[in-house]
Length: 296
Image 1 (cartoon, helix red, strand yellow):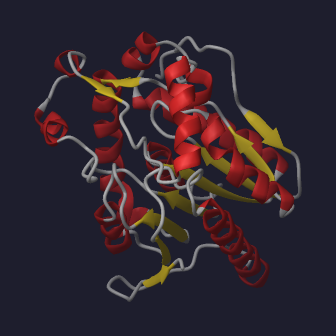
Image 2 (tube, one colour; image 1 turned 90 degrees about the horizontal axis):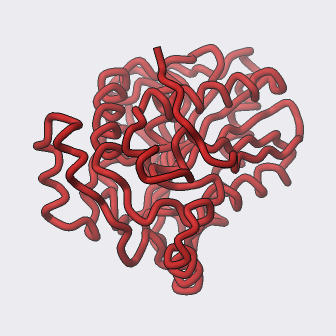
């Protein structure tokens, strides 16, 4: 049974639109704000868009420290239920840890999720900006020990665009977690992320819904090899967009317009397939080639 986790003011938002819905999930220690640009673009394209605040986020450090990944998942699942009541077709998209949650929803709720979009999915923290000692964290096997570690935000904060980075830096220095997310991610939450990743890795070959991967070539937090692993191991059709001028937080960085446009095109493809077949699940023989696109 999922525990109840005390939350601060709910920063979730929704844009009412048509019968196609998009559920957008923010990253670990992040906030719904990081999804707003893409959400607005999808709304202008006629979709109903819901961006929930995940459990224990934008609250206190201790709340996030004590939360479990099942709590984050429960809040994402509740948002999916809310969106499904409004929409006939639903895609789930997420950034970083939110992308991993999106995959878990896709595996668990096969009849309710018609496709997934994964922005810089984070299975392993192996980007060029991650300190070498942070990678040793995977050796920690107990949450009680993990709580002794903290992961402080550091430049370039996952953002290549200097103007956007300046705004992010100002928000971080202001200490307002509702805007910038956590100044540091507690080790307990990072430990829970590891548990979520392990669960998703075990379920990857069950996922037959179409998936769009969007990953920066020079991701400072999670290298592109994270998406390559998913490309090889997901069971359904997988398209991949490689960004050449962004860092980790692709939903706010220089190529955010590309991210939004490719997401809209992906959703339109799903809508078309559903109109023709009555189902969005397109089976693909294992070992078949995957399509890789590059963003100019």
